[in-house]
Amino acid sequence: MSDKKLWSGRFNEPTDAFVEAFTASVEFDQRLYRYDIQGSIAHATMLARQGILSDAERDAIVSGLERIRERIEAGGFDWSVALEDVHMNVESALTDLIGDAGKKLHTGRSRNDQVATDIRLWLRDEIDLLRDGLRQVQQALLETAEREADTILPGFTHLQTAQPITFGHHMMAWFEMLERDRERLADCRRRLNVMPLGAAALAGTTYPIDRHYTAELLGFDRPAENSLDAVSDRDFAIEFSAAAALVMMHLSRMSEELIIWSSAQFGFIELSDSFCTGSSIMPQKKNPDVPELIRGKSGRVFGHLFSLLTLMKGQPLAYNKDNQEDKEPLFDTVDNLKGSLKIFAAMIPAIRCRPQAMREAAMKGFATATDLADYLVRKGIPFRDAHEIVGRAVALGVERGCDLSDLSLEELRAFSPAIDEDVFRVLTLEGSVAARDHIGGTAPKQVRAAIERARRRLADD
Ligand code: ARG
Image (cartoon, rainbow, N blue to C red; front, top):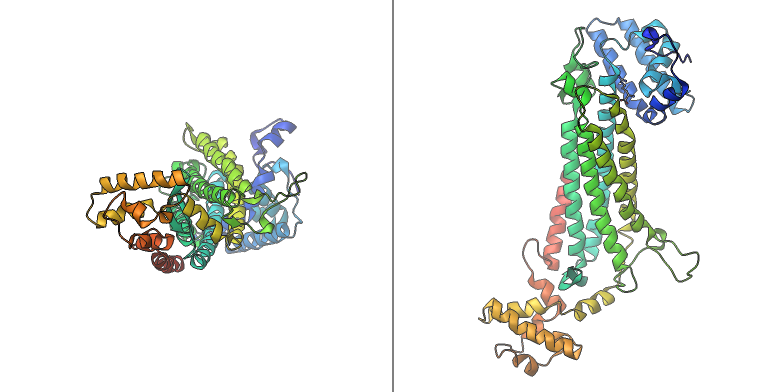
């Protein structure tokens, strides 16, 4: 293949070898080849329909591009750094293959609208895959929530025992976090699905092109309204990165809880051996490396969001070479997100709960103190007084090293004569969770209803 630069006409001296390597993007943007070829095929098809290319030229271009795609996929394509990027590598190979018709492909377009189109086409597919990945984690959460709908553990605020909750309820909280992430990605996809082609370098083109037709061929909702904006802005990439950062933030929180729960100090769950590793020095260790790594990966994804924001900041219209730097952060974000979701989908259903340890922890921390206060309110005592009464009962429990339910009726009545035999029902963990019986509450019955509704949402979209 000839390495002759496609823009060499006005230059007298060759590019400095280091500058050539420094400015080239082909090492990483070759990943876009399928979308580059898809965009070129649509462009050539439109040009022929408008009489700008002959049908024979179009056919030669289309079949040439298809052959190039096959060659790339078979690993037989020679990527050239001298040809700078994926766009010029493909175009140059096309001309080598079919001759002069190949030189006509670039009529009425520029690499500026071409690259903006390629990234949008690529990201659109990746978003669809990521939304599938999220759906799979959500599916796993639903199954686990259903299996553990009655399993009781302490819920925390400030990481201090607060009130008993069910494990199913906790899984469904994670589900909701990811549901918003899935919506955010759908929203971002809607805004990015607008076609830059036809903007050419920045101002549009003098040929009688039909942008609506090209947009239709490529599955875009419409052509971009403004040519300057179309070639220059990468806000869609930033928006995607922000949505991706939120997914990673959520996964890092989920990871953190898995790590805490699987520690010897908590012992609430056991992670499957396949998601843990051992220590080279301490034989007893089983480390939750996989959730730790995902927690760590959130850092680089947040960093990419900042790279892209900073990349775009202060750029004058229209295209600037700065934008070539948009690809690596995007690629790395997508790769790490995909991997993390894949792992979570497998790791969640493999969680083994230890209900006994969870119960003991819930019993230890006066988790039903609010239930006792609510009980007193039902007996006619104002909530603030009830709060005070229960506080004193808790102090006695702390002194004795026992739970509220271990105190005798006489001892409890010393705090308030409104307390009767029926108090012991509200002091049980089961009674406590079952009493939170409204939409959004932790009662097993409500968790099962929430799972049903969630299943329908997941199936709908
Ligand atoms: N490799 C370039 C990029 O990724 C393609 C567009 C180059 N356009 C230009 N006028 N230099 O942004």
